[in-house]
Amino acid sequence: MLAATAGLLTSCVNEDDFDIPPVKELILAEGFETTTTGSGSNEVPIALEGWTNYNRTATRKWHSRIFSDNKYAEFSSFYSDAGTNDEVWLISPAMDLSSTANELFSFETKIRFWAGACLTVFVSEDFDGTPDGIATATWTELNPTLPGSGQEDVFVNSGDLDLSSFNSSNVRVAFKYTGSKQTGVTTTYQLDNIKVFEN
Image (cartoon, rainbow, N blue to C red):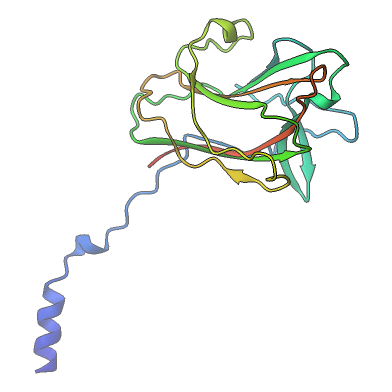
């Protein structure tokens, strides 16, 4: 009786019920672990292949830092020259999303020494990869979860941001820091674990 029952139950299970869905590779994964870090006031600008790191209004750029064996990108206008304003962009390499679907984008942000919101996040399909092209490209602003006043010294996840409406072979995500030593908007922002992936 038990054997017959076991056989009946087994016959209801298809091999497909045990199929493991394929693991999809990350479209973009950047944790800045291969970047070169400076020490103290010696900043080493991030210079990763395919990335654009450019300050449109001054000279300092996003640079690499390390703490507790974890590297990340960092910028603060606090260390800029007196009287200067910063508009500094960190833009990803081009991603081909023309043959993928349901793409999501996420990253982590930490703030220190809160002195006003400085970070905005964008996506573009027509940026040409040059500093001059920043001004002429079309940028769509995204709405990530970002830390604010009272949320210092802890990495905060952006949430999964939908990129499924961007279907070209030239999709780039961008982080724009807008701060000012002159006005005192100088919050330190740290970026890490940038990922674009299929859902």
